[in-house]
Structures are given as structure tokens and as C-alpha cells.
Image (cartoon, rainbow, N blue to C red):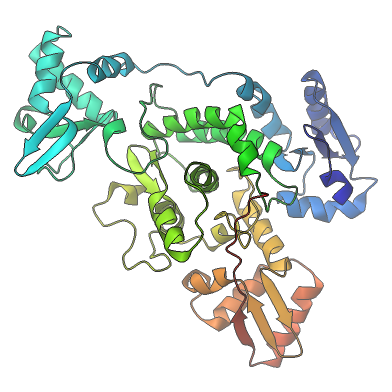
Length: 462
């Protein structure tokens, strides 16, 4: 497998078997795209089947890689062909412009937005509802009823938000809220890395936007990710024009609709967004180097998604862990009245811990995930992590099992006790000598559980 990992930049590897119609279609499609294809016949190289399944979480063919990055099967390829990573990197993201985009641009350059006082506090870049209605009437020629309807639409479509801390609580716009202060979403103060510009596209379905983002991430990863997925060339990625285009696409997350996502779509969407956001944070802010900087990084670095701010902690502990307290967290990420709670999974998904990459060498490898067979992909990621000595070490002589700190930090997700933790580990190991050793140790009784040091050094190649 190592000889296939050392592929030249831009080569596509297809793992296939003879007589497979999907394999033939995939290779023909790649040929029409003018991409150099390296075909590996798993019928002849049967010893590679297990490795391919480990890398992809799938036992079907074909399985396609751009350099070291797994693209998927033939169906995934045909979707990517509509707008392949190479095509995306050559042109800006195109979309249908939303009907209110021009209106918001005019509003930004009008005389409505300014500083307004409520009590002892001055709120910058804000405007009261009454001024917006007046501007819509005088500058846009709207009747009063149409002006109110437009203001309500701008609020519902998340172009603007109610200013926090100025009294108004409910998300409304009407006669009784004319003194309420509002801001454009892009002017709302927060740490979101995709804020500061207006998302001018008509709202894109989350599943569709997830696919587009994954295409762009694939392009970046294929150029700047190591073959084993453990290290990133951040400096090279920052200089890549595709990164700026990824940032443009990430802006469209601002008003994406999340509530229609299925469980599988939600898992793939937020895992991919989390891993991309960590990289985005490293590129814009630098890698955290101590415990305080790490705490601030994961509670600060964020995206605006569907009109709400999601930090890395919010995505991991709020959405993917079913709104559980994170490490060193006193409270759950989302309160009972927090609108983001509607997006959270009903319960913690332990397998996400082997898919999320925090930017450190001790983290699991970086991969991208698709909703199709997501559980199988995550289980394969867990098997690969446990097979590595960074994840699990079985010392038969001492009857001791040493596990990654991940299992200590999130023990509640794996059962809450050492006994349940070891049972979970055994059930999620692939068939290997290590699994046999673990069975022998557990059968002897009185197994000691300890935890390995965690390597927090940056996964940067520089």
C-alpha cells in the first residue's frame, strides 16, 4: 500500500475488479476528464482488500482516491463530476442570487445603520425597526404594510438579527417592535470566521452545501494532506487560491437550513465542518500552544451556520454528543431555550471521537465523510484508531490496557466505567492479534486501565 500512497500530485487511484460495470464507468468518466488514472485490480492484489476497507469503510468497488484522499465510489464520482474539485478551484462559486441581496447591499450604504443608545449602552452598527420601515418607504417606495412584511422577511431569512442585550427577546418584527434595535447578521459581534460579508445566495439545502464544501475540502486535502491523514501543510494551503474559494463558499453557511437534515446527513455535515473549521482557525489565528490557548481556541473559533454561531465546542459537544458537557465545561453547550438545541443529535455518538481532528498529532487522521454508510465509515475509523498504538496498547504481562486520553475525557460516552469501556473497545476492534490479546487479558480478570500521554503538538508539516 505504501507504493500507492507515494503517488505524484494530481494522480487518481482506482481500486477495482475486472468485469465490474461501475468500475468501467468510473474509469471512463475519469478518462474523459483527462485525469491520470492508476488502476489497482483487487482481483489480482487480494492482499490489499482489507487495507482498502480500512481506509474507506467500504467493501464495494470501485473505490477512488485523489492522491491520498478518499473520494468514494462511482456514485460519489458522478456527483463530483457536476462540479469537480479541479473545476471549483478554477472559478468562483456561482449561485442563484437571493431576492433580498440587492436590498441589503443598498441598506449597508444607506443612512440607517449607525450607533444607538439604549439606557447606558451604545450599540454600534445597529438600527431601530422604525428607521428601517421609514427607509423602505422613502427610499424603496414601499407601502407601510409591504415595509413591515419586508422587515419580517429580512429577520426570518437571517439577513438581520435582534441586538442582544437591548431588551427585545422574541424573534419578531411589527408595530410593537419599532423601538427594538436590529443589526445585519454580518455586523453582529462574534468570532465567526465566515462572518463580515453577506451571504447573497438563495438559501442552499444543507445536504447540497455539504457536498459542495466536501468537494472543496477534498481539493485542499489532496494537495496539502499527508498520505496517512495525520499532518497538514498549512502554509501551502493558505497560499492555495482554492482556500479563498472555500472561504467564499463557507459564507453561504450563514443562512443554510439545518432542520431538514437526517441523522446521517447531520453526522457527515458537522464532522466535515468541524475538521475544516479547525484548519480554518489554524490558518487565520495560528495553532494554540498551551492549555489556555487551546481552551480559548475551541470555545472561540466558530462559523455562522443557519443564523446561529457554532464554536468547535458547540459542534462536538452540543450537536454530535447530544448536548453533553465537554472537557472542563461546567454547563451543557445549549440551554433549553437555545435554538441550536433543535439541531443536536438525540444522544451522544461515541464514534465521532475517531473522526474529529483537533489539529494535534494525537488526534485521529483527517478524512471526509459522506451520509451514505456513515456508520460503517465511522466504525472503520474507530477500528483503525484502536489498531494504532496511539489509540490502544495491550500489555499482556502486566494485564494492563493503555488507551488514548480520548477515552478518559469522554468515558461517559463509552459506558462510564472501566468495565464498560473495555467492552466497548473490544467490540469495536477489527479482527487482529491485538484483539486476541485483549480477549486473553480480559478473560484473566482484574484488568488495569491506564491512559497514554496525549501529543498536543501541532500536526503542521512545518
